[in-house]
Amino acid sequence: MNTQFKKGALELCVLAMIKRKNMYGYEIVQNISNSIDVNEGTIYPILRRLTKDGYFDTYMVASNEGPARKYYEITDIGNEYFETQKEEWYNFIKIVDYIIADEEK
Image (cartoon, rainbow, N blue to C red; front, side):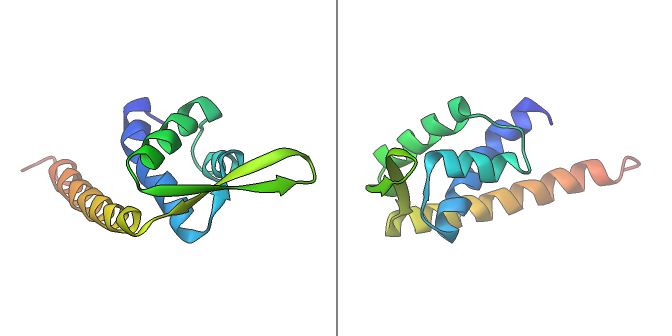
């Protein structure tokens, strides 16, 4: 997949994952990478920025498989931001589809 396409969509994908259920970082990476080729180095900066901007809260949960895990939970303003971004995304893809759909225009 084109890297530039991915860059624009990953933040929205991360928001959607956390909106569905609270997750820890590696779990988010694994879930997204089932559909899009990503790695931790791409996702963790997005998580840090969204948390810093107040869209996520975090909390720690003990793990049986090593150190405690930091879980991400979407905030009320995170939900509002997600809905706005989702609407913008759908508007954007409609415009792009319109432009590229009929080459005879």
